[in-house]
Image (cartoon, rainbow, N blue to C red):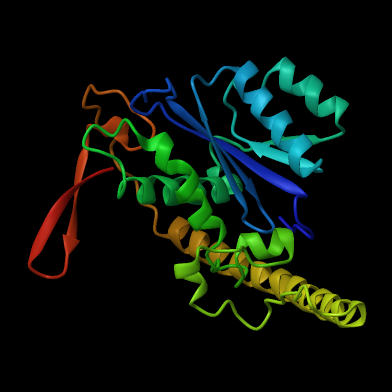
Length: 265
């Protein structure tokens, strides 16, 4: 899918159910801008169509309207309420096929990033994840992305974020332009022109990098398809649960070459 500008196409997905927090939240609605990779993650008490729709409309009125929204076939997304909202706002709703989840792969990568990072900060009971979620999302949005070579923050707001003093000790990069309050008007105008030129160059690079990354992902997907073999599916009598395997299943992650530690998946 060719996305040409920020906040044009969004991918939506749900993480959950998670351990219930003190604020009664159990789910996370993730919204990803497919151009900038900007992520919004909203803690929710339920995944009803009404609550999901309320979050979607709030974010659209905050950041502006989009052309298309991509979701899976969950009933919280595919419902009359969302149909009427998207129709009113002139937004196309595309539903990814259950048999072709790669069409909404950016959301899966977003969810994995959020879950992987949250695991590092939650308490032993894993019921305070919503307190750490804003910082985790901020970290994702201010980190340089592989496919665009820029941070989502810069691509969406055309400037780098103001960071805490301890972080400001690190250089922000050549494309970071700060207007000194003591500068005269001409100097500020020149700086804004320089920033606009930088943004234009960044946009061209982003389109090229996204196209290159998509091509590589397509080749990887095709190679995996060629290697598919026929397997016999064996039922173990257990239900399939979303997210960190509902905090029950465990996997071992190798650390170095000598030891391992257990992680919640």
